[in-house]
View (cartoon, one colour):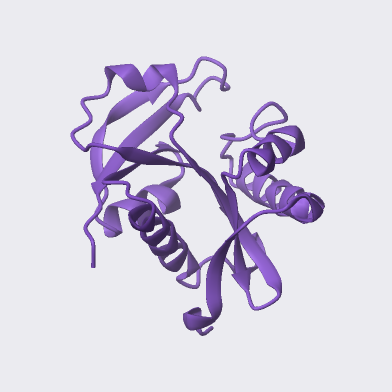
Length: 175
């Protein structure tokens, strides 16, 4: 797989069904692994539609093929108020997804780096996210990319045993 062909583009209305299709495949793949981080409430097709309208949903393209998507905005959950963040002017990564059929080939690293570059281009100084504590692949990816653990939050809306999310932050440096 040549990663040089990948690019991040702003999502458009005509992409919504394909975006939702990738989400449904990702959710099914996570469920099969016993990871219950996403459900019908979040994220969902309506959420993705709103994110397109607000111009905060980006798709990862491999040529003409959509292979993933992510929401990048400034919204932070109330639970995050207890986290001792260190960075300034953050952008937040929400619901980063890669089609499960092509996961495990280094694409997550490239995807996150593209998110970081977009953030830098738009004047952000740091990037934040939370990841389900039971999603070991995601935790490993963020730690490998230099994200620092800042603490954990608990979402009571999630099923018992799936409520802890690890909060990460990374300072963004211009190249």
